[in-house]
Amino acid sequence: MVSLTDRASWALALFLTSALTIGCRKATCDVEQCDIREATCQAVAAHAAACFRGDSSVSTPVTVIPRSTTGEMSTPPTNAQVEAYVLNAKALSLYLLAKADVTLQQTSALQYQQVGAYYSSSTKAITIIDDGYPLDGYWAVAMLVHENVHALQDRDGTLGKTSPKTFDEGIAVSALIEGEAAFIEDRATLAMFGTREDSFAWNPIFDHWQSAQRSRAFASEVPLALEYSHVSYAFGEPIVRDAYLQGGEARERSTVQTPPLTTRRLLQRSLGDPKADGDVRAALEATAVPDLGAPYSFYSSDALGAWALEQFLGRLDQVDLGRTAAAALAGDTYVVHIDDTRTNVVGTWHLRFDDAATAAAVLAAVSGRLPWRVWQTGADVVLVGASNGTFLERLPNQPPLGPLPAASPAAAATTTASAGPRDARTVVCAPDQAAVTNR
Amino acid sequence: MRRSEHRFTTAMSAGLAALTATMSAPLRAAAQESNDPPRHASAVEARASYDTSGLALLGGLGTQYGSAGFTAEYYLPIGPWPLHVAPFASLGRWVIAGTNGAFAPAGGVALAFGHRHRIYADVSFGPMRSQTLQLHGTVVDARLLYGLETGIGWEYMAASGFTLRILPLGLAVGLDPRLPAGGHTAYYAPAAAIGWKLW
Image 1: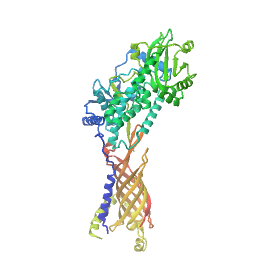
Image 2: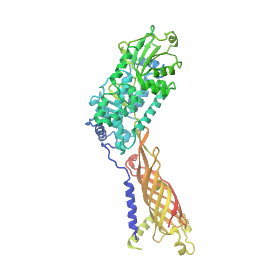
Image 3: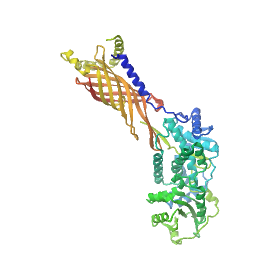
Image 4: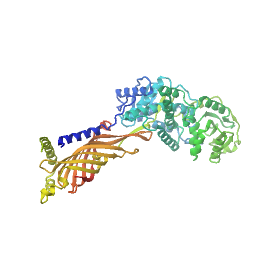
């Protein structure tokens, strides 16, 4: 006969068995949930970032500031910058890629809303934006790990190693910088939760993430101004993870230091051939600027890239074609002319595809949709849009295209998405990476 | 009764006294009235499930049943009062949004005072909450967070063994440091179960 105390022992054993079902899986690097306002927690995050990166730790000061003070992150724009932004936005609005009347201040405010933290290589410091969320949760620690990766990138020269020449190139370069930080942030989050990195399929997560970012971009009135947050993380991290799987931390770091130079490569999850991409761009720059005649004069130039093309065609309800055409975009140039009143703009977008069939499909999709002058030459499609419709009517069917002039100071200062907190010295980070939900 | 059982019974009786002290006098009276043994009590008690030791299997909703699951309880009558102690083990399925859910084990001990209609109280250890990890909008992992639960309510047990239990007063206290607010979070935790006492 089993005594009552024996039975009670069985019940106790059952309690213990239940307790032991709590997961206890070893993480690859030590990182734990803590309050990022505390120095010990900041040290934990710094060590974790270095550990996951296969690097030695760097001590970086951390400051937490309220959201209301984020306007101090950058210097106020000059009048010239404000005017340049307005003119560029008006030109982009011809391609549905910006609101015609959006101001630099409005765009900056939108960009600041996306910022959760940033690392400044000039001050060698991390700043966390306090939105009122708990600063002792997984999310906060993971974000601090992310920013510490930027500090490590700064130390080894990754930040600033590649100087982007165009908007398209800038997004591609920053995508791998952010992609590495996001990847390590994810690894730290998994370690904190006790989840093995190989316990789930990553690619469906990336697919879902990228799809969500595409939707956000389509819903945005200024998709190019927010391209950094829409594209960099979601499309950069898969490439960095691929590199890590192929060659560990060393391959990961070398990949970030030799990034693809176009968003086309980014969307294709391919490093591509930077030299070939550069050759296409150089060839296009020889036939980028239409001869519009007086009263218009050249104002600025850029390359918008595959993501912008995808967004443009998507906004014409050509989502599938947008994906196809973006994947086949060999290169592009985008040139803005202004008239002598500095109120009317002309935007010329010269697209070169891998094949004439794609060019023909794009031509068919855009013809007759909006007041553009559009033509195809082989695998090239040229679109000319003007804020003054009567000017377009006077324009020859296919105005001659000449080479880009030497970059003017205005052009250098007014690349398409230069507004906001992003500059060469600051790496900003959007706070939508990972979430732990309690129910 | 063996000596060890007697000592345990004495301890349980003391615990029961504390429990019953919280009851109102009318409730006690009603319970006593409803639990008056029928005529030929000795013969009926020999057969009625509610007064014998034995195993019960129930399905229930509540933290002590693993959210939604089954529990096995072994009733042991103790002392001169109509009192049973019932250690139990449960296995349930915890529904976690974005996942297939998780098996949720729980275990505890209950006290039942009365015959057909009885006061029922339990204490258990088991999952209190679920926690999911999302990467970029996709749930990649989930886990259960554990703590202690206590509940009190009413149980009906027919002579045949049919059992219905409703525990409207329940409190679950998280003991897992991974819970928000430092791991010590209290939740309202009602429960209900239905099943059979097999013998």
